[in-house]
Image (cartoon, rainbow, N blue to C red; front, side):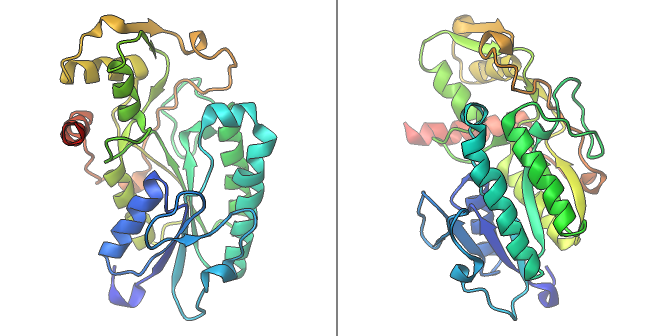
Length: 297
């Protein structure tokens, strides 16, 4: 970033997978970020409860060039599907309240949204595709997208992400989740119709920095161009880890979850602004994770 455009990022939800990586990244850029946490306290972060805290609790300075990144959200899709009203108090009501407060202070906002805003019936969604979510999580994200766009009169960034591949050996992100199943010796039901673009956390951080630097505004899709179904990804991991595939069962997602509240094919097409982005491919991501897993054993 140019010196005269240096920002002070405020990262809401900085204790989470993406938020904490962003916080560390901006620290390394000497940008003095403010990062918030709610339940998972981490060094350097400030407590902020979406439902009850106020921006004044963060001791906002009027002469700083702030930029807000909203990562804070409940993300357990199954739990949200089962408890839509309870979870909407945080994911919708409290988030929109935060957006309104930030907008009153003219602080630009980047909102982390999801591929779940799409129905999942066809895949290959562009950033201009119709958003028609079927999961409660996707519906909540879509409500916030619309509200943010209206409150800021389009002067915002809405970034839709796919499943994240982390740089951690023991969180619940996609590769770790599959490997824990593979190592359990129990039968693994892997859905061949659940299709997505698993994307490296480091790529997402670079994409966010690009959008901020370019002062972009609007709706943006960002994901690894490679799409996989859950079955394919499970078999690739088993092969790379030299784990017998006999326990892997090819199923439809409806065999696992009969609710019909999960989009199946959420594969996306990247927004044009990312045309020059070089992605970590899935094999590079897996090899990186293997090194982390070995260090944990």
